[in-house]
Image 1 (cartoon, helix red, strand yellow):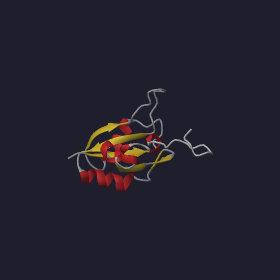
Image 2 (tube, helix red, strand yellow):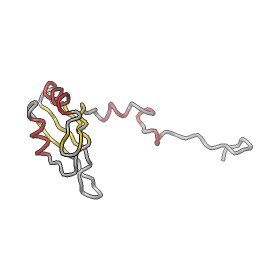
Image 3 (cartoon, helix red, strand yellow):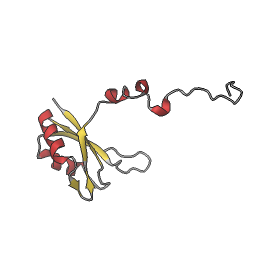
Image 4 (cartoon, helix red, strand yellow):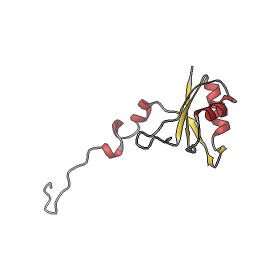
Length: 111
């Protein structure tokens, strides 16, 4: 069963091949993805590495979290499924999307 690992704090110059080489020491790497910003076409500073086994993912997380890569210390953790994060705040909405009660004027009526 594949396990997806989240890797944050990547240098802009980091390549998918570099990540694959770094993680492959800990097990078989099924896939590597570094998202690109649509507006400026540059890497977004994070990526995902899919390890072939949960054991490989755990090994990589233990070994690589906090590891220096270039001038950056990596942040490495198990990736959350989108559905798992969605339920964590305001019934699946971000706090900014939560409904806001109408403001009251000094007289107590809604504005």
